[in-house]
Amino acid sequence: ARDLQLQDMLAEGLEARFARHAQVAEMTAHWAEEMGSSLFPAAGYASTAEDLARFASWQFRVLARKGDEALKSNTLREMQRVHWVDLDFETTWGLGFSVWRSEAKTFVGHGGSCPGYRTHLLLKPDENVATIFMANAQGVGATEYAQRMYEIVAPAIKEALKPSGTPKQLDAD
Image (tube, rainbow, N blue to C red; front, side, top):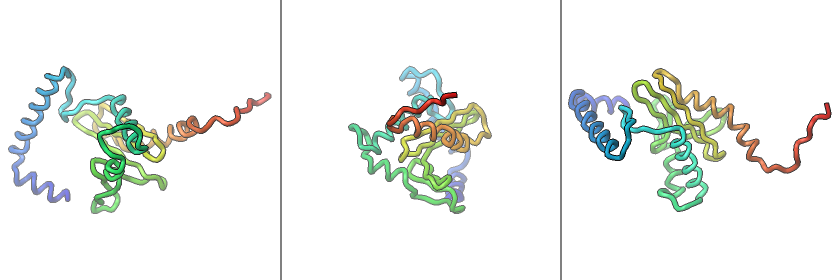
């Protein structure tokens, strides 16, 4: 698939491709200015950790079938299941999401990158847990950081969400 994509890029011509992308970036930047945005990255999309947290929360709501949403839960589930496997049989993709397994758990997510910036949104839909990693650096393993964040915070989140039951006993010492 990557070879075919490279062939398409070369057939279009790198100068023509760059000009087309520059034109789209200019139109997008103009639209953003009209909408009152002063911060606009080269990749064409600006977001915050809070935006991504809301996006994760929205997905959890859709999957739980709560609320009148833009997508049906079955549509989102279909997007988050494996549709494509890379030739290495390790990289798997849904529709707009990467899908992977770590320690017998399935995760979905989406990353972003433009010069000087890396992000990754990791979702564990069956646990309603998400992590967001953002860095203003290049060459950073954003997915790995988001995964490690999950490993650190998920147990505490799951513990906090357990029904209260009996109060914890304090040590007498």
